[in-house]
Image 1 (tube, rainbow, N blue to C red):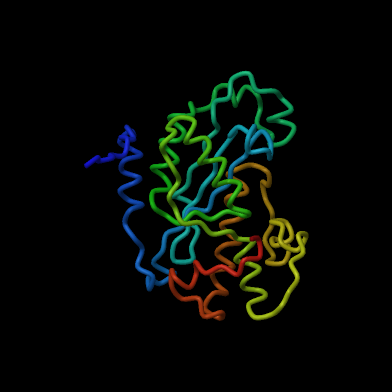
Image 2: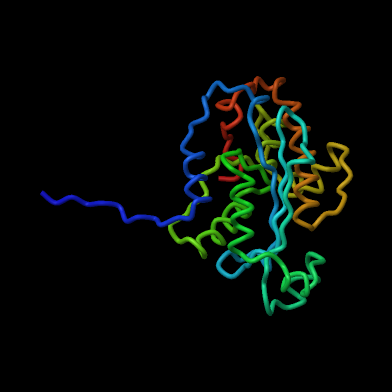
Length: 229
């Protein structure tokens, strides 16, 4: 009889610990107040995932409907030889900053240790999740992001149109549009740390509306209505 064994991943200790943490299942009935979230944003050289490079990462923790400023992370990735058009023109990141930033390996170590097994939250989260996973796999091809994710645009749609047949309009659910609707000043937009912070404040506002929609637990929160499918 033939036996087939999976190829060893040969992951560094920080990724082994990450996988161990992510293997711990969250109880479906866990109250929302007991969950830990990391609200994050990435800035990149473009929106084409096949070509884009990570410029920076910003993240901040939210728990018990509170933004924890002490539990945050901001990193600029080292990108030698990158053009000004790919940095300062879009994000205000100077080429000198990108060239002197943190190496990809060290940046990823800090990010993975920071996020742990928290639920990742971002505005249109799939792009940020995919670029972060792509960057991770450039260093460790066998690695994958294993965190559960929440999209603040999707959550806002779900809360505002819980039982109706609303036809989704793109302009209504941009980050800027939601900031205006929820009376949030969009300070320091278009930096990873700035966007993560404003998204975290929006996320707290949305969590405040969850009880009225009978969203009390991890299981309730993770349900989807499929607006972006």
